[in-house]
Length: 295
Length: 276
Image (cartoon, rainbow over the protein chains, first blue to last red):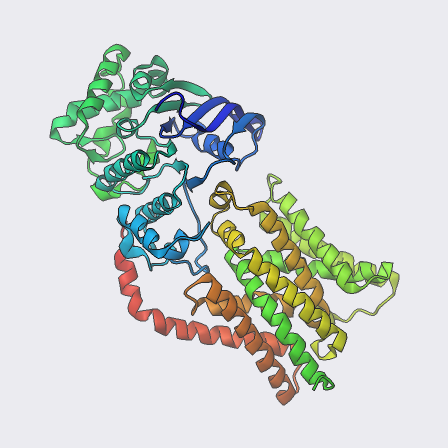
């Protein structure tokens, strides 16, 4: 958003060294109130490590973090294993880190389409349902800073777009800052202010458009860039994404990828080796739970 | 009433069950059953050290159990060894060290049954006083740290990033575990104590809709096991400690049967929803 909005979280030269190597190094990122910052990058590029270090869950070996302690945070982690021996209803889970009136809990669950699950045990929920519940819990905290680690994983594709829209609306309504990890650049673009492309270090960052046009991004996501070309090509017959999803694309996004593709020259050279879109075309819309990690 | 050894055993046993039940719930939820076991096993080393330095055994057991729990926290981060293996190493080496030390000093004759099951029938009025005071303190602390401890059990990451004092609370939890072990060791031994931690919690799970109710229920299940086991031992002239463990196991089996009947109609519905 604006340059003078309140800084909620800032890291300077953040580095985490584990098991003989730097998982991340030299990460500078700033999240201001009202701003959505999205981290993208391949598997193992340090997205989750960056977020965990920024939240103070990992002790950084280098650099500094400012602000995490000063604002109210709502956190949706990537994964949660809750032992079945713990009798925990969705409603009780909503109150995990602080009291919450029932009406507000139900309202937040309603926003993510899970109000009917209020009395279910969290262990009985499907991956996508639990993801929505975790998002509702984070919303209900009325956070200054929302931290989302792949918030739509396991959510079916219609729900995925709705949830991204919801996250954007929540930002608009509350003015909170959002730090989000996502692998779906093409989906994330609409609402995101800043994209940070990670590969152990900050590979490139800036507005979604500038990142998508950056040569570093093209280098890092080479085959994928040409996949997103495929999105464009398939746009009119209802796009098959490389991770198996089917989506009606947003026009502006595709234009951008298109122009990006023009000077990246990935048009056909990866066709043989990735073959992604065609391989996955048989998948139904509801089978997307883990396929997104396949890249 | 306090003059009868049987009544004293009942009164002391009820207090131990009342504190072990709620704490045991966290042991079960956090998948720490073996951890509690290890801390309890280390108790013998505490007894030996207390004998050696002429301290109250409660102090010795508390110190060693607390040290073992912090050693565990530190070793958790050591690469290349699973937590199970570390626990196995600590559990048995501290137990063996306790046995060797007691033999070396020749200060006490080792009573294996006493080590495993304690001697609840030997509960003195002082034991009762210590158990009740300590138990009340432990339950009060548990209530005070309840929300952050539960949040940290569900997700340490969420709890910590949302400003709950997760690490401090986990330390406090370890310390009150060590305190329970220290308070109960003489009366319950290793096996009866870990039984009173685990079995009532597992039994209560079947009937508890919330974590809070499960903790309360676990305390009552433990108390029922103590009362039932002690009266059975009186009636059949069986050893008291093992009788209490068996009573707890019988309650657990009954809960399994009751739970199976209760969940039958729900099963279909749950499968239907689990289709993502």
